Image (cartoon, rainbow, N blue to C red; front, side, top):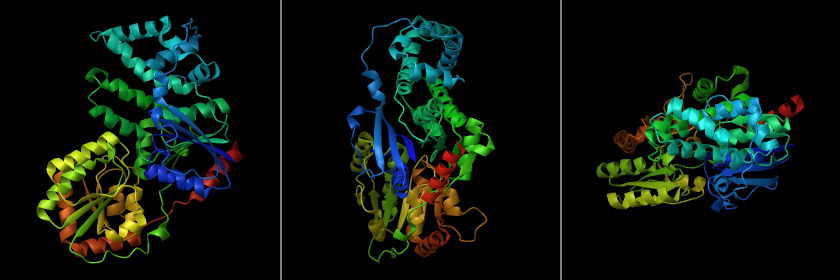
Length: 466
């Protein structure tokens, strides 16, 4: 079987939970061929992989959003659309409910020129109508450039050559979900979708904080990504999430029929962690964060919280284990550490987590958005309790589901609340007996139901049915 995995902003360029999951899945399904169709932000990262690709990855297609800006402007020719194509473009520009199959044929099959369309009278007429109806007091030039910035990368992606595959599997909605939906539609092959975090909600959180978006266009940008999500949900034959609450959010966003939805929990290589001994007693309390430097992981709140903790627990040490996914954010975090003059922050970088856990008393996670974090599962398997923010299924992992008897495995606090997070870490440092007990509870209650062969079986069933 030839499986095309469609990825946006993760594997093989960035280490992290989704990337690890993809890499492990490919290795576990060695009897199948994989094509990686990957979307990146900047073409300067072309070929800059953080992983050695498994032997069964037979092809990789790299598409970069900034390449859309480098495409030479063709001689503008007249663009003629049918009635259904005109209606689809109107709905697209309004971020409503376009007929995506019409747009897929228009840009992928017919290869309509993006520049010709965006410089056409047809596009101008649609924008003028929108300006009169929705933005009568906003400069037309602002609306024009906003719409272009939305449409140029999207339409550029729709013109990409589709890799040949038996099944297309996207790991998010957004641009990746659009490529998966298009591939399924054009190639008449099944398209399946797996969401680790809810992509649409993550983009919404970013857009609400973004300073580059004028307030009067913010909702339009948010609607744009919800529109892309609807396309992915509608076209996928299967929509998988990691835990029940995530599935409910998918249903709310996409009005997805129940038969499409399923939950397959995350998992790890349990035997790698289960025999890790407790940290030998010394004069320090060592706290680990298995996390990459990225704004969504909110490392700055982690630093502020640890700064507060050091005032109360002078012998605490913080170890941050992970790559600098965002160079600017990494530098900002380094600057913050220097400004606060906080000591005992050890930035270990990309290390062997199994070995490093031997040095740690407990682990922490300050993310503002998560799915089912692998770092928490790894900590559990190593009998290390955790302090996390209340995102994704972290509370469910730490507090239990209410139907088990394993007990608490750590503390969960609101996101972006440095004081509450410092209090939780202080409790963990001072109440060592409880911390050890919670670590044992984590180990006993650790579930590892996810097996890569499940995905192999799913793929076989999909091929058999289609």
